[in-house]
Length: 168
Image 1 (cartoon, rainbow, N blue to C red):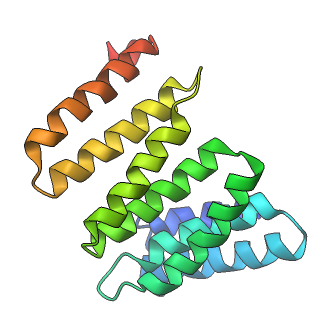
Image 2: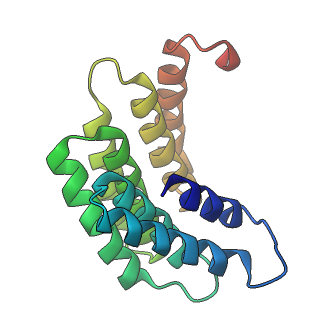
């Protein structure tokens, strides 16, 4: 399942093999990985594949938002129930991005804020920093620059608290 998802990621990142466009190829691999994972009861892997497939479905010229929402819903419920914060955070970010792309900004903001909330746990500086960074990027991409600045500053402060040498 993981190797199938890895191949899908290759296409998602733009790998060309001369057949179908990369996004179509990625969708095929993610759908296959999801189907196999669910058939052999690898729920986490299945919902991760679904989240990648959802990302493919909302990109491109003809986004299928309804299909992506359905794919994200299963992962959201499962990861919330199991307490898998990193995967739940990924789904929340995907939901937020989807609704931002649909120009449903209040709904998008709800998911960004939920992402910040679930990542606000001791020892999860990276998750918190990433959630704030995504929220700041939302403000920036929607032209809300004054709101973006303090949120970016919070994200940077959290990244620096990790004492990662690459972050200075």
